[in-house]
Image 1 (cartoon, rainbow, N blue to C red):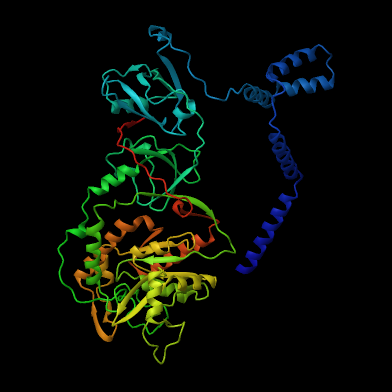
Image 2 (cartoon, rainbow, N blue to C red):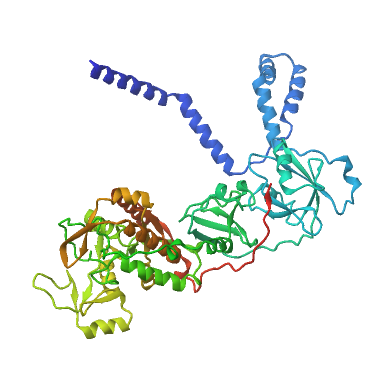
Amino acid sequence: MSGTESHTDREEDYRFLHSMLMEKKLHLLFKIHERLRRFEKRSPIPVQERAASLASDLAEELIYQGWRDEVKELVALFSKPHFKGLLSVYDAVAHRDFEPTLPPMPDDVLEEDEDSVKIVSLVKTKEPLGATVKRDKSSGAIVVARIMRGGAADKSGLIHEGDELREVNGVSLENRKPKEILPLLAHSRGEVTFKIVPAFFKEETPSHKKKLFLRALFDYEPTEDPTVPCKDAALAFNRGDVLQIVSMEDDTWWQACHLGVSNTRAGLIPSQQLHERRTALQRPKALFRPRRGKPPVTEDVDYRAITGIHIAGLRRSFRLGRKSSLAREAARSRRWSTGVHSSVLAPSYVEVIPHRRDPEGRRRLVVLVGPSGVGVNELKKRLLISDPDHYGVTVPHTTREKRRQEMEGVDYHFVSIHTFEEDVLNHRFIEYGMHRGHYYGTSLDSVSRVMAEGKVCLLDVHPTKIKHVYTPEYKPYVVFVKPPRIEELRLTRRRAKFICNDDDKSSVRIFSEEDFEDMIDLAETMERQCGHLFDKVIVNGDIVVAFRELKADLKRVEEAEVQWIPAEWICSSPTKAQRSCGHLSNWI
């Protein structure tokens, strides 16, 4: 019975929709719409500017032309309220009376020297006026510190940096603090009137500089920044966002827009120098946390624990040998961090340029990096299993003898010591190491082979080795896998077992508290020193969620028609800001 009723309802809906679409009035509306669109493209100008008064005059003339039926009908039409309203709107559009009007010039303007004082009225909207103010240290006057690109003040062209503000809406600013101006503006209705003493204004020459785009390497939330001149003036962004820089004139606060919305008002963002100066004052915890001795641990062992799946190329990288451990890598990272920390600043922004993807070209290399135990190898393995025709991994080189069950070019590329060392001298290896007298390594040629097959090559290397493939030839997309907070590590890895020694598969144990501390310390060091190379940061608290996020992100990058790549791949040198600190100010 319900199925019959549902079918009947659908038929009634169909008949109603069909009858509505067949209505002649609807077709006429479509034709009117199309005609108006074509008319609008011709940029029409008004034929008359006083249609309402002409209609009134015509009605009076018609009365004296005889009272025929046609005259009566026309006069009645002119007297209808809707027709009068239509003509009134036409006149308003012709005179552009719909635009806001500014108040007349105040009578007391002549009290000041007309050459040195001007009155500026700006129509107030929900958006800020787009200017910041500060107190001049020498004169004590309130002056305009900066003009935000795209704001009302910038569009008016009437207010400039350095102008002295005497009054706001008739209220004197003498002996007032910059923060006291904000309530005056908040209570304004309709428009805001400023009495200004203009600064010496040098007419700007048209700029032919190329557009500058930067990818943010940190998250920024203005509401959490106590030093921002005004939170409403600032621009929030996340790591990885591409920002278009519209002004770098201020040494401390740059002006930027999110990519694709450059026509809106610009916002303040911390300059490169300001951000790096802030982070340089923060002593990294990894350098001062007390360390304790730990037994050896292998990388990614929390996930690779005896799955029964063997995939060539998914062995651990050879930088630490086959008996690698969290403890050994932690010690190495501490030495690396101590040696370079004084000269390497925390990353802030990196210049990027748009790159159009060639559908027939080679796919980008995907580099996965992260501290030992975080799950890099497991993510790589899951990607490969999910689509082996799309993803591929490199086959390592070694100088040891081939074993009976191994295959050349599948398990390893077996080469002589002379050939291996010659390739090392020619910088053909991304990373390499020695174990029990035999060399092992990942070569650039092995990466090129996978990419030549039309696959996405998945590479797992130490962050310091990314430089070997950080070129236009490979266009690497670098994903940094970092651990969650230590509380979550205790919950997700508290019972995870892993192999302590690759040569002894029966030797297993669980993670210790020291392992968690090492993992977090290594992640902090890697991000601090090599964060400018990372395109994506994924927190691996749950391997299923992290894998889903990673795969979706890689799909998005591959399908994007325009990709943002580091400018240094194309240009000789990236843009760097070398500026001194400026003044903070209040947003109005």
